[in-house]
Image (tube, rainbow, N blue to C red; front, side, top):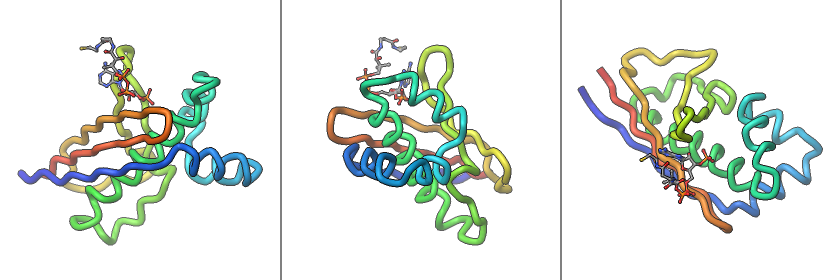
Length: 123
Ligand SMILES: CC(C)(COP(=O)(O)OP(=O)(O)OC[C@H]1O[C@@H](n2cnc3c(N)ncnc32)[C@H](O)[C@@H]1OP(=O)(O)O)[C@@H](O)C(=O)NCCC(=O)NCCS
């Protein structure tokens, strides 16, 4: 068993600009429908949630980069969801990575920044 971790921090304003300036292209490239529905439900603070999901995906890429450099995992191959208590989870959608036993994630955001930390347990 081995644990690999990844972390990322992002400025909310950077994500807001990317979303507002690209006429839907950035949204379409990075986020699944379920993620967009979740963030849009947060109305005034939606960019904090978008930024957090961007950070979560970057943190996941960091966690797996050394072990699985050949797996071409891109933004929408993974999805962040929340359980009924709000606790986030990372789901692998279209591609599976062998030896990944489980993935855990924690997210936080404030007015200016969002951070995410991901731990991957390998068999
Ligand atoms: C859960 C809680 C700690 C989040 O803290 P916060 O300072 O309000 O918010 P932060 O910006 O630091 O973090 C927000 C992120 O916390 C995560 N989160 C929310 N609820 C969570 C939970 N129950 N467990 C783990 N993570 C949680 C989410 O990922 C959320 O971001 P997202 O909505 O974009 O996915 C806070 O809402 C709280 O204390 N709630 C009341 C008590 C409670 O329900 N505790 C949970 C069970 S012990």
